[in-house]
Amino acid sequence: MAIHLTPTELAEEVHMKRREVISKCMEMGVPIFNGRIDKTLFLSSLRRVTQQPKQPQAAA
Image (cartoon, rainbow, N blue to C red; front, top):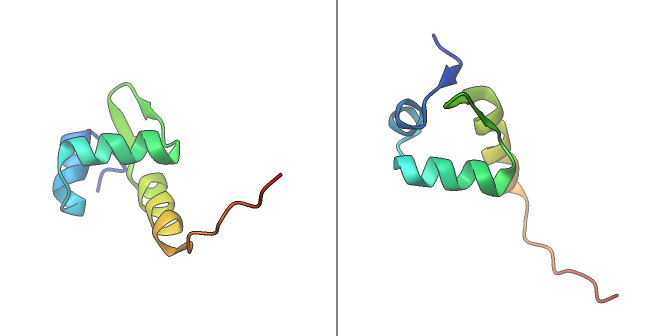
């Protein structure tokens, strides 16, 4: 089982579109190195982002 996948391979595994995977990587700060994404890092980051309730930012 491969851990470092291309955006297309990862998209197929997580049932997303390729562009969505790339956008999420950029949004979450998950690196795409040599055209590959660490599947474990992507999934854990995605879980963290989806589980966190949106907190309003405090005014400075």
